[in-house]
Image 1: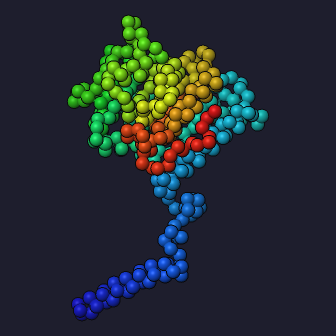
Image 2: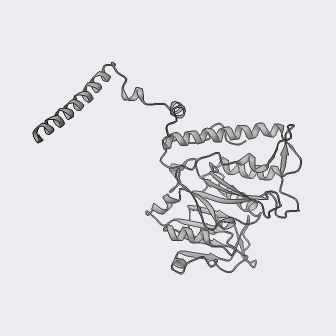
Image 3: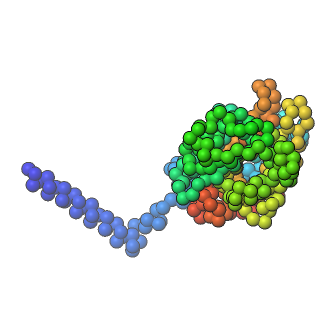
Length: 335
């Protein structure tokens, strides 16, 4: 009985092997399609409903971003401002300014919110990649701590990062920072600006100057939540690196339309030019979170997560490195 079972197994194995070699031989002479022939194209995989691989997902993201840019340009020709917050079409459809900058790109890995619910937490694209990274210590800069350090603690607890936090309005980290992580954290009571004023109290510095002071030439994750000062300070940062890549792997940026719920706003042109300048450096929004300020107010500012997607192979630990896709927004970069 046992001998008969082994004989049957032997016959099955030999039959399978013979069938495999027959298919290979026939495909060589064109009798049956080769492996390359039957490999589905990107578009056919979409139609078939099969999951895309990573490179195909990124190609799809690039197309989605390109479409958003085209739609944005077309919409500007038809939208007329009621004020700088809402724009209306002849069809009486209303949108906010943030609809022009929705997260059209796909984070290629996990998208995780680090920190408390509400304004304290931030979305991080590929947080698991930061957790796995051991080649060097990650560098995290956090501008605007206030009283909530849950974001900083989240990075310190789950990665090997060192965190530098900056806030001229408070004296230290919030209570969330654990004692065992204080040796990897530095707090500086300074503000972020478009100019250096070291003799002021408190002092203000440009981001480039602070990086030089701390001996850094690259920031893995940069959080900027500075209540409207992002326009001048980040504008200066982009000026300082206008001829090269921004030395940042990923931004978490709070962009304000207005500071006072009942006060004037910054205007569509300023917000739009600011966001599109980031895009021109190869940054792509993968997540956003609209903040209203209060339950009955319109959306006054937005949290945007912007990983670097362009020229990623040349920067340390940029999340899109190694995909071999090259510049992902050729021909459709914002004017």
